[in-house]
Length: 470
Ligand SMILES: Cc1cc2nc3c(=O)[nH]c(=O)nc-3n(C[C@H](O)[C@H](O)[C@H](O)COP(=O)(O)OP(=O)(O)OC[C@H]3O[C@@H](n4cnc5c(N)ncnc54)[C@H](O)[C@@H]3O)c2cc1C
Image 1 (cartoon, rainbow, N blue to C red):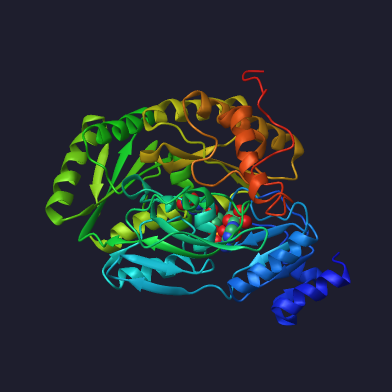
Image 2: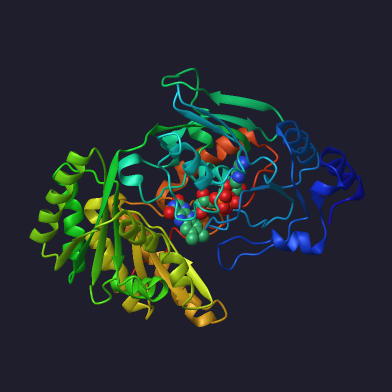
């Protein structure tokens, strides 16, 4: 519970109406989309502008109270779970698209703006903001920036990081700083913009962002390639890229996922296929047509049993929407859904998928795998039940082995969901002791009192020494 003195100071900044330390209010922000993590904050504040954020953070810094910035809590790494209590900062008042600059091709937004609202607003002007996480209907741009989120269009267009060109940041001591600008070039000092993208709320609070836009592609086409052999699907991915085509989207779904998604969306997905590739290309009509034809040939040469090109925009939209709903569909199976995002070089996709299937067998688990095959970013997902302790232990061991395998194959423990609290114990696998020490030094320099989202990214204990095969 907050001391009365601190309560009064926080309320003096935002007013009673934007401060909540009732049990119900705190309970509502004690968890996020990540299963199995819950902890009560001491209070929740909703600042209305940057100056209020700065005043609030100064109070938290003075009393060494944890600050947990929160968008809509859709992260999948426990990133907004207030594990050490403290104050949750909400951005429901700071949710505007401030400007769409058609001359400089930029959009300037507040952190609480919803991703899809920005995408729709810029498309209405013939422009394009490519990062499209599956959660874009509800996720915020502040959350996307802090997780460096990816999406279905990441293969061709990159991830959130590639579009953030300027930030307004409130540092843990309350200072308000700006990095970058509406600039194509800027090498003035350290690249703070890049440092803050993906920093998971551990370095400061982002109160404004300027994002790069590109012209909206003239047209797009979508196709589905069906396989009876997982490795043939994985080989097609490598072969498409090797043939110098970069499709907008190159997604993979295994049979378990296709079956569950079809049961949810009922659009006639091929549940008898062992694997499906969902492929999309955009650009000028001539290039799109040529690429689709070439990719059809490649998929067929790799024994795709069927290749179907969507005949209308509606059909194409249905297919991509079905893919976006994969997680929601899987979440219907059991009370708990654990989804990971191990990522490997795309040339290792086949090996990773094979390893996941072997690990699933070894631990007697139903692991459904889907993901951004073109990026090497897979989402092995286990529908389970957190109340079944014995099964949860098997799930945890299986994921440890999956992370270890991904790193062995030259990959990483997370491609887009962030480290948060969930993957903190595995970070050393990827970075080594030296990497962790360097990152902690940056954190300590900016946040010496460790108030910003404490307990995230860095773990007390490492799982580095897990031995595969035991
Ligand atoms: C169904 C579903 C599908 C998903 N699909 C994808 C996908 O395709 N690709 C992908 O990358 N992710 C995906 N995600 C994960 C998640 O949606 C993303 O991580 C998203 O960016 C989180 O946005 P949010 O607004 O919910 O942020 P939150 O979850 O509220 O916060 C995320 C992180 O950002 C920090 N933060 C938020 N706002 C600020 C701020 N203003 N300043 C400083 N720190 C801040 C928080 O402290 C936290 O560490 C999916 C999640 C779900 C539930």
